Length: 345
Image 1: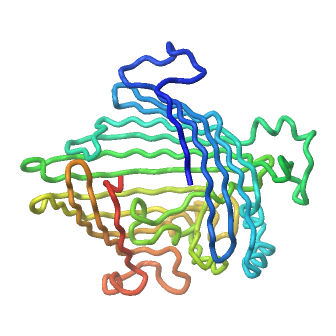
Image 2: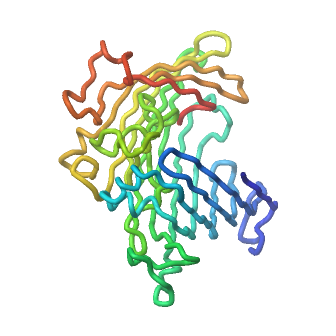
Image 3: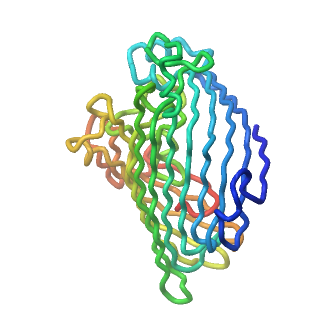
């Protein structure tokens, strides 16, 4: 449940700070989220105040100086609680916390169309910093059994997180009917001070319609890890993410387009066991890779797509070769189907 209000100006800031043809905006948002999982239930109360705008319809920005989240977890399953007692990472990640910080997004694109038809490129940088202001008042706060300082009875989160995406699409052939699109993505987050790890809602994950399409969302990684049995619904996450995607797109008939793609990447932890931790020794074997085919319906103002991804290197395999031969690509869990709106990148 979300409520928001938008003002066509920068509230609280002089207009001379913004020069450009587009209208600057101030967004005030509030939301409530309730999640019921087999392992636990949680509520998230959020509120934010931020500014956004663009220059020449190519450079877009969003700065949110006030971004608040109150997260509470309850009705924890006994089996999941027992697993947390054995894993300090889970204890620090899945607990009540208060998150207050600053987020920002800087996005440049050479073509801002909803469905670009020509060659274009883009760069997106997202940052998230939380908890530094509160740390100056630690000596006035109570602490819990973990030694974390508390606000309103819950620990506040302290971390820094950044994600960088770069993409480029080449268009060629008769009537510009062919295209090659590629993307590189890198992200890292680090909990420090009042937090031993990133909050669970800030962790990276891979898999899904806009990621590694041979996997469902949150079913790959971290690193060489297999699916965590503590979660009845998969929730594989990490502090670091690397990903690369390559896709060949071509016209078929009427408004239909086809695609052939390759995805590679994974998530890793900065601290953990040998399988999940990012290291030069395990990094090559930890790269998950898939290939697949897709069908798109291009309506000019909207693009609908369906993709089928097939794994050919699965780092989660523990007993045998992680390379999957062609005769197994369409069997069992080695394939995944995804529906999406718009291009995946």
